[in-house]
Amino acid sequence: MEFAAVAYRSTAVSGLGSDELDHLLVGARAHNRMEGVTGVLLYDGRHFFQYFEGEAAGVARIYGRIRASRLHVDLQELQHGPVSQLYFRHWYMGCRQTGNSVLQQLSSQQWRREATALDGGGADDPPGLQQLRDFWARQEGVAR
Image (cartoon, rainbow, N blue to C red; front, side, top):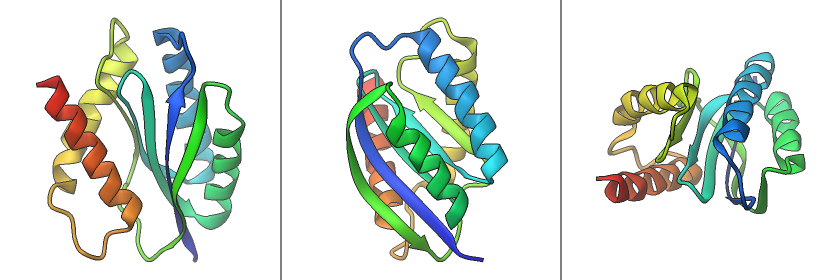
């Protein structure tokens, strides 16, 4: 079985609200589950950073949906290709600011628990995973 991963950073469209983020969260979880794709989507109130992985065909289909999304612009691909192992068992979303959304609050709590397992990392980790850790560390530094 061939595994692949994608990491990207993008900018949220102006006026993106909590309702749209909830819709994104529900839709992403459903589609990712159908495709067997896992990973994490982080949102800092302005930028998205996502790292996702799975079988190459499923990753390709999910990435097509992401590129077609109207919720973000200026997508910058940071990694796209084969990986030797998978790092996430589930799909997570972490938000620095969750507002009144219970979905976003629960998702962020789940991600914060999982993120502790990523601390330190290994030299063999894909570059996108290393950049994910850096993005999260910056957000946690801001949130404190």
